[in-house]
Image (cartoon, rainbow, N blue to C red; front, top):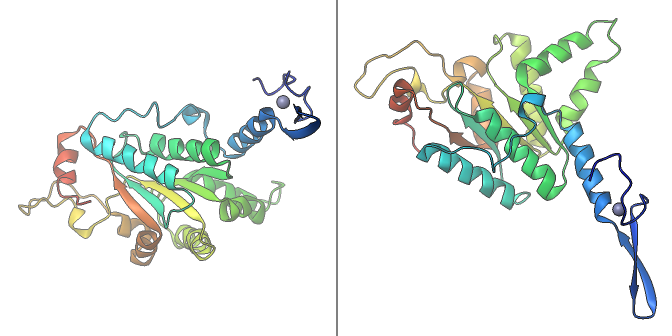
Length: 249
Ligand SMILES: [Zn+2]
């Protein structure tokens, strides 16, 4: 049903009257729940590019992607009985954002909960803009939904140059959500182990990549591991495959 059309079942008031033997009962019309889901999807701040992403159209063309998809499905099915969030790691272009948005969409549709998506750089930019007195938002208006939303996706972690302010802001968000036992999903292009410093098993260095700890610091990396299960996604690139061969689930 289109959001603007009037529901033929209830005439738009959101209640249906049922006639049971000699009495009438009213119950919520399905359109009421549908509208609630639509509102939650709108509030989730999903970028237009990703708004049609779902687990159904997530193409799992490699065993690693298939495993990632299975873990994502399990996460959604088990929610809210999940002990942790998810940290989705892998190189550019392998579908991390698609997977994170798919989980978020499924949580909204299947569980009707409030979710919020933010590209990490975009979030930082909005917070910085709020310091500008001409802009009519303040820092708290930006941060409140980020801290309070039942499930938060922070996309592309580590992409911003890691200044003290960036790390402090990230630490504040992550520690607040951790203490409040709120679920957080994160994606990052950066590897997560010291051995991933571009060094292969035979000791050869393949590149000068930084890892996640370089970008966010060891303490925050540890905190993420306390609050997230890690999903590693490999690409089809040979160099990536070689690196990913070192990963252990
Ligand atoms: Zn209705």
